[in-house]
Every structure is written in structure tokens, then in C-alpha cells.
Image (cartoon, rainbow, N blue to C red; front, side, top):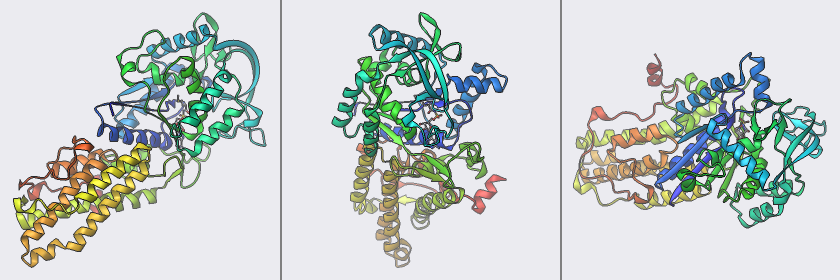
Length: 518
Ligand code: MSP
């Protein structure tokens, strides 16, 4: 694979980031880090969506200018992603000057090509979706199904995009590319939505919405959110319809665009039509993830159950985000909904990261020190009993990531950890040492440590800090590309001293972890 370009949805900045936003950014970061282990040129884009009526209203309520309000909240997103070690290459804000100018040019090009026309319109507008809804979209009580709010009736002269012109081409693309929409069960939903599509409004009267990008040559209209927001995926790379710099040439089309299931329609219909109208290649995959609930309840401000990702790190006094990353990334099968609960979080990370994985490394290294002064003797090498299973696991993990099955890949890694733990129990190196079978004992420990190098590589996308602490103790190069792993990276010689052995992850709420908090 030559290059890999991955994007997330850009978040509305009318509040602070919550665990649902974090779920998406963690999933994306894990996929991104996995593909950096497989290819040279990778790029990860995230950012914030800052225009629209909702931001305009909320900033007025807070007695701030929209820009001040966006600056304040965009910063909160950046800080949260830093705390979670989200390693994005670029953070785009739709209020960036370069983006605004590029969007104006894109809009003009669509107008010049006849894909955008002016039209008087009366429709039902949901400011939560920042979109017009048709009667068919509403619940029986006439509410927006996503926001459970009554849409307002808006009557305006707007610019419209000829979505219907692209209907057949989009249907054909979806049908001929079965892995375009992941998970595939969502493709039918989109095909159904396509049956009823109409042209869409892509501007609003400036007299009603002032916080938006003005249409070039028509000051009375601002470009409405979806053309503005969706274009971020290409404007970030330097595309503006006339020029496109190297980054665009290098990275477009995106390999994966990660979004939530609620905005799949915008990405698999509106966005694709826009790209077709601009005569640009289409993204390879759109990954529509499910939603995260809290204790099985939908997160909402009115219920007061909105959790911020940094509050979880603080509550458990975690000095690395790895446990939360691991937990969220494996919270749900690909495309399905997942849940966060404190109890489940504690239980899973303690069981998987501390007890199974961390402990395995810790006790194996301790035995190597106890029985062999931390040396790997030449005669211990060569058997590599678990090599085949390790290489099989790499293959399986890669396969899962090809289909963006992040939880499923984590389960494979766990299986390898469990298998290695079983190997230790079955071979009981402590008994071998007691019986004086030192070569056999050294061989068992070395086999385990070789697998641990593979586990460090595989767990890295989920737990970059834990993986690097594992790699450090194994003097293993974590930059090894997945295709170059042989399960033979350990060499004969001195590996580690007693004082350099440290647990890679302490159980949440363990006595030691508690001490660390004070
Ligand atoms: N600004 C638009 C996206 C424009 S992309 C060109 C938007 N913003 S949002 O802040 O409402 O949502 C951002 C992302 O977070 C979306 O992909 C959405 O699905 C996701 N999530 C919001 N709440 C979520 C959960 N409770 N769980 C998982 N993801 C959720 O939509």
C-alpha cells in the first residue's frame, strides 16, 4: 500500500467533546496507527465544524462573538485529543481562512457548471441536524428522529444543489463496490434513502443566518453547513477547485472516512454527489460506526449523563490514556453500538491489560532475571514454538483492519495473549528451573518474550504508551513494519536487569496505582 489517508467527522463546537466524539477519534487513531505500521505515507485529518445557526445562537446566549466562542471550544477538542494521544496530522477548522476561500471557489465552480441553482423554498429545518427534513423523515409526532425536536418551518430563497442528477451514478457505485460502505448492512439503508432524494438547499439567507461563508458574488446568501463541512476533507489537503497542492495529489482520494451512523446519508449521498460534480475520485471506504451509550442510556444534556473523555482519565487517575483508548476501541463490533460504564471499564482493562498482558511480560522478565541474570543464552533461541501462531495472528489482525474491524482485531490479540499465558502454565518454567532443566526453562521464557515483541507491535495502535514500555524492556524496535516481523527479534545476550523491570500497566484501583495518585 502506497499511501493511506483517513479522516474523521469534524465535530460541532457548540459544546465540549464527549465520549461519543472521543470514540470516533480513538477508532480512527487506532486504524491510522495500524496503517502506519503497514505503509510509508499516512495522513490523518480531524477538526471542527464551526458555522451554522446553532453556533450563532449558542454564542449569542453566552454573550460571546461566534468566533470567540468557536476558538474557546475548538481548543477544548484539541486538548482532549492531546490527552488521548490522538496523533492527527492536521486539525482543520471550518473558520480557517484557507478553507473558507476554497469552499467559496468550490461553490462557484458548482454554480458555473450548472449543478447549483436558485430556488424559492419552504421546508422543515432541524437545527440539530443543520439540515432540511422531509415529512417522511419525521417521527409520528412530527419530531426529528435524531434530536427529538420539532423542526421549524423555514421559507427562503436558497441555492440548491442538483442532487437528483447524481442519484443513478451513486446507486451504481454503491452496488458495484460492496465494501464502499462499512459495515455493508448499512448500504441498503442508503439505497433506500436514495429512492426518495430531492435536490438539497446549500445556502441560507444571510438575514437569517449570518455565521457562515458568504457566497461569492451574492452577499445575501451564506453557504450552508454541509457543502462547507464536507469540503473540509479536500480543502485541508489544499484543494480549491483551481489549484491543488502536493498533499492533495498525494493523498486524495481518502482510503477511509470515519463517521457516525447518524451522518451516513450526508457522506454516502451528498458528499459523493459533490465529488462527482467536481469530477474527483471517490473515497475507498466510508466507515459508519455505531453510537456509544452511557450505562445503556443515550447520552443527553437533559439527562445529565454526558461524559467527557478527560473526566474518565481524571476519575481513574490515569497518567496514560491507553486503557480508555483500548476500552473504547474494543467497545463494539464494527458498525454496531457500544456502551461505556465505569464498572465495565475497570473490569476489562484490569483483566486484559494488567492481568493477562502486563503480568505475562512482568513475570516472564522476572523469571529471566531470577534464573539467568536477565540473559538470553544462544541455546535458548531457535525453537520458537509460538512463531506460527504469532504470524497467524498478525495476518488475522491485518485482515480485520482491512475491513476496519477494530474490536475484532483486538480480540485476536487477546487470543494470542491467552494462548501464550496457557503456554506458560502448561510448560511451568518455575518447575523446570526447580528440576534443573535450565535450557528448557530458558527456551520457554525466550519463546514467550519473542511473542511479547509481536504483541507489543499489535497492541501499539490501541495502547501506544504501554507498547513502548513493553518494547523498551524487550529492547525491541517498535517501528518494525508489520510485514517485517519475524518473531525472531530477540538476540542472545543480556536483556534486562532487575531494576529495569516495571509493570507496563497497573490495575486501575490497585494499591500501587492508588499510591501513585497521592
Ligand atoms: N459537524 C457534523 C459532522 C460534519 S462532517 C463533515 C456533526 N458533528 S457532531 O459533533 O454532531 O458529531 C461528530 C461525530 O461524532 C459524528 O460522526 C457523530 O456520529 C459522532 N457522535 C456524536 N455522538 C456520538 C455518540 N454518542 N457515540 C458515537 N459517536 C457519536 O455531526
